[in-house]
Image (cartoon, rainbow, N blue to C red; front, side, top):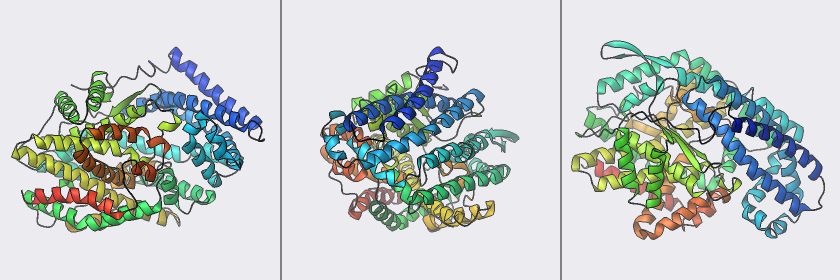
Length: 588
């Protein structure tokens, strides 16, 4: 069954009465807040009432934007040639750029209030939004002038936003020439990349070679897009006074450098263990020089664990129920109410994601499901994002906006639930498949994510001087993979174009969207260890943690579970759980 999501709960069409009325309201709201800040953010009288009015407006407006913008973007994600959706998305982005000036005015005014914390404490509404307000005031020092912020926001629409859109179109519409069953076919890139999980070695290698060759068509355009985006980020980062794009990313992540440094150190320490895993997998598949890149996701074991989408649903829901009925019911509801778009097809974005629609208290999940156990695990991952949204559904829009590192916590926690529950009921042959899949997934988040962090760090360093050519980008990517994977991979078969197919590099607002995955995995592993000790009593605390992620920094969120993320011992303990799995796999 090919599941396609329903977006009717948002709007039945762009031409519907509701959508047109909301677009009018959207435009009027921007005009209103522009006028309001001009009239109210220049004096100190009635400060509490003004901030309350602003917060009330922002919550309502955020839900309106969430509904309209997600509708356009979700339409585009399954049909990147949808002209109407593209125009609406561009129109909204252009109109939203007009908010840069009033937002800057409000933030600077807020920062000028001497007794801000006392005012916040005097109002239940403001107190419930204290983190948002204090954070907004503190970050005002990185804002340019009102006029400059407005100009920068507008220029992004013809700059980084346009480059990002181009890259999405290039990768989603790229057709790969590949020989299948003796005949040459043109298949979507996402479909060819999914062949990395095929049980046939020849298909995996053939897909890898065809994929790399296909990038020749879009490599120069992709390089231009990447250079344009990273160049813009560097320019704005310097203009605003950030120490670096990484400094900006850490502030946006509500994460301090101390946490990142100890986590990265623990990850580097663990690399020999992961190299041991890759060498063992290479040995099992008959390779002596390490694992070729195209064999990273090769299935291990004699059991062919293949799932239809209906079987995947039953598997996920059943195993989620071992944690809580609330989680299981959420997942079952997502399937039964058509919240999932499952199969790959031309014009659809590759990969997987979950869009939490706070405005209607629902979510939508995109996947490219082909039936492997990894695909089932990916579904569980995205459903975890959706469950996180469910736990935040009673929070205000402003208090439901959580940072990137914590965004991966619930998703990876759900992956762990699936793997461990499946292992508990598996035959020996199935256990090998499940365990290896779990280790492979963890290795991607630790080792491959580290290679992406190294790559992006080097890109920003070199792009600061000049644009990078395709050959230079390939060289940096290969070097980054060698540093992270070591001799775990065969250096004659790496992936020089991984920078083309990973969309996170092309989002100017989400630089270094790599270390958040590692944080999410290791934080989740630590939480799962607590769950095993606490049992059912953990569930309530876990839900409370997820519901608080939009209104706290990472240190304080972790403290809710008595976790010190400044301690390297915490990160080491989480990595040790993976190391134990690797030892079990090696000795099987």
